[in-house]
Image (tube, rainbow, N blue to C red; front, side, top):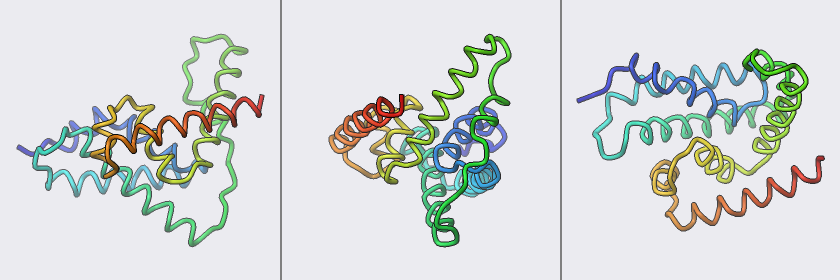
Length: 169
């Protein structure tokens, strides 16, 4: 049975938005990528056979579309100017936290997103999926890497991010 697109979007829209955010710093390009991902999911859901979980299947579509998008944009533009990641994070944040704490959290998140976007594509893809709570096996299914390579890549990427973030402080 093919899942309904509307139901999938209700459940996975935030996840797909975070995938887009991990690949694009520019708000306009991030929104464009999100739309491309949604279209690809809409087209791809008809081919879902149930071999993997629907979440894994959707994430594979999303990451494949994101990789295609990044390659296309890299050919067009050598670099992207960051258009106020901090402001977009503040806009999306909950108003429940006090202002100072929210600014600190937003700055930390912004710094982490910038560091993730600077990673090479395979590391960026694996660490993003890991941060979304996928198991090594699920990450393996999405990326096509074997499970042990996923583990090694996650460990090395986490170490690299720790070093980079500790230097930024």
